[in-house]
Length: 225
Image 1 (cartoon, helix red, strand yellow):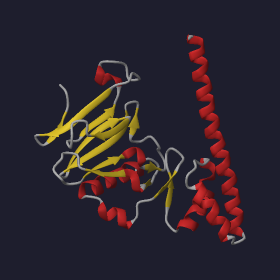
Image 2 (spheres, rainbow, N blue to C red; image 1 turned 90 degrees about the vertical axis):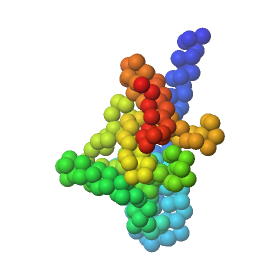
Image 3 (cartoon, one colour; image 1 turned 90 degrees about the horizontal axis):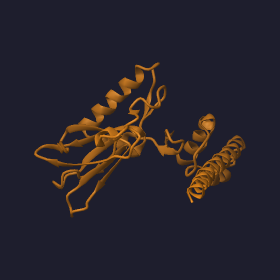
């Protein structure tokens, strides 16, 4: 039975890799089609390809051609994110929505990246999540550093424990390192922040699964002792 289980896992992983490869191959073919369409000013084909390509992962080597196709059609700047998917870049509209705290954090992130071979940071529109984190009726922010793209150091804000996430409540910044983070409401309207974190928080080795929850109380996020 155990052998069957291992075989099932192998088939699942192999199937997943095959699906990813097929998606990359498909996007590569679309990028080539769009490049040719742009050269011949075939706007109808560019539109058809861009609507499909925006939902696919792309080979990083074809980044510039892909972005040229998408930005020509959508008329907005896009980013090839760390997971090789396309995201719209934060523009003036999104930046006006950022609080002073988020603006300062992104300024500091740009500085951190620039210190590594003069790197630059791209900020997709979904890097900042807006949600009430303390049930006071006001919208707070979560800055997910895993969404930012430093051109010279892709893992600058991540490690074995996950990716840095800054939770901003009333201008106060609290940083967590987490593999994933969700805001849940298991007991009604009050938000509970649940994170997958490094195994050491549970007295285990780092690779072991560990879940940590926190709530805002008495002016800060409370954690178990």
